Length: 117
Image 1 (cartoon, rainbow, N blue to C red):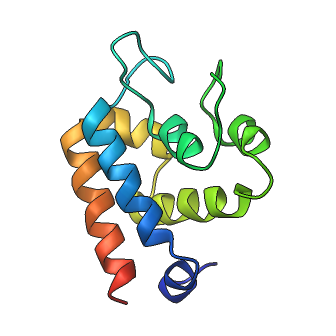
Image 2: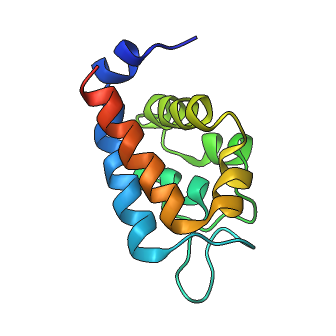
């Protein structure tokens, strides 16, 4: 199981900070990976930050991990793991349930916790 030190060493906190900004700007989608209004699912936003440039039909881990360019796949996995360890739930279900503001708050809090560990 990865530790805070592992996440800090791989600079996950930087990506989580960017992810919080992206989610705050666009909002969390509660239906599909990308809505007509520009809202994004948390997993699609993370994949986009990790180099994915397509439009997925689904936003689950196994689909997106294969779609992210190989160079950025390890960071995608580390970020996903860090979020799941923090919220103790599937990141898509959790973010849809808590909404944009709480998702952004928790991502920023986790980012700071990792950075300062």
